[in-house]
Length: 332
Ligand SMILES: Nc1ncnc2c1ncn2[C@@H]1O[C@H](COP(=O)(O)OP(=O)(O)OP(=O)(O)O)[C@@H](O)[C@H]1O
Ligand SMILES: [Mg+2]
Image 1 (cartoon, rainbow, N blue to C red):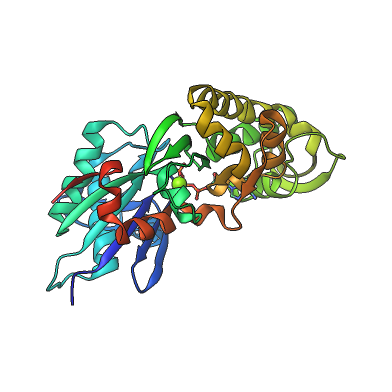
Image 2 (cartoon, rainbow, N blue to C red):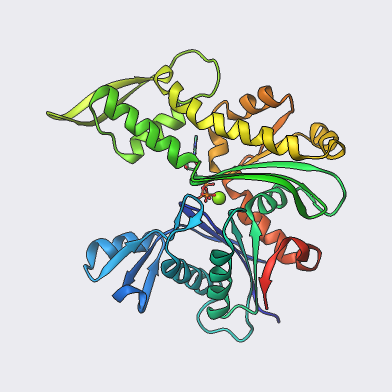
């Protein structure tokens, strides 16, 4: 019996954990509650919100912002707790750990995560860039010479890469540009135009049921919010969201264009045949796939559960560490 194999997708809003042979064992908000500046044990995930709300000795921390490590102390705690969740506190054999991260994550932050995993008892710890993880999680096998193009739109970043031979040929990572920015834009629009503040769940509902990229028949949704003189009901139309959707899409399309321009013609021929792969929770935005297909003149495939591509990819990587060595940063 060997140590467990643990895959962690360290997302801006959600941390997902997979254990080989057990499947996905956790999907928790990327949050920790820390006591005494982190010297005392912390609480991870959904429980962190409750702990921080109930116990004034605990402070809530969000370790990841815009795809990057915003707070390395709490990020270390998060890695520690993810490993405890996956492999327990008492281990006879040390686990192997693969963590999916934003491709433009700076070297210092990478080392800090690897150290955290080593300190938490990993036998080997590897970092895998999100586009590679997403491609593997979507079932693309990267061992051949063929080219692939992956777009991973998360909450805090958009990570685009052309891949071949288990490596990145060209890529663009838009740190800070993802579903959260669209969310903030919509919330701000409602506040500015209607003088009403709506809660986060309402903004999510507006985006999920109203927003559509590209031409469409106008839709309406009645929502409740907080106006100047108390609770207010208002109607929002899909047309109102166009400016936010445009601001969301423009950098993404420009980045895909740039990646394509950097990709050798031979690989582009493969990509045109295979199509562009869309992953990440933000891929669920209605009309996003056809907008990209129209703009690029290349077919687009969206995974059915796009938010799970990256964590599934860490699972695949754990089984193929030898093949993937070239694409990984690791310590052992
Ligand atoms: N139906 C939907 N339409 C549009 N966006 C959606 C929909 N469902 C989820 N999203 C967006 O998906 C995002 C979450 O995606 P995901 O879980 O992949 O992010 P993450 O991995 O935590 O972040 P990142 O990869 O950027 O660090 C949220 O910003 C959310 O708004
Ligand atoms: Mg992600």
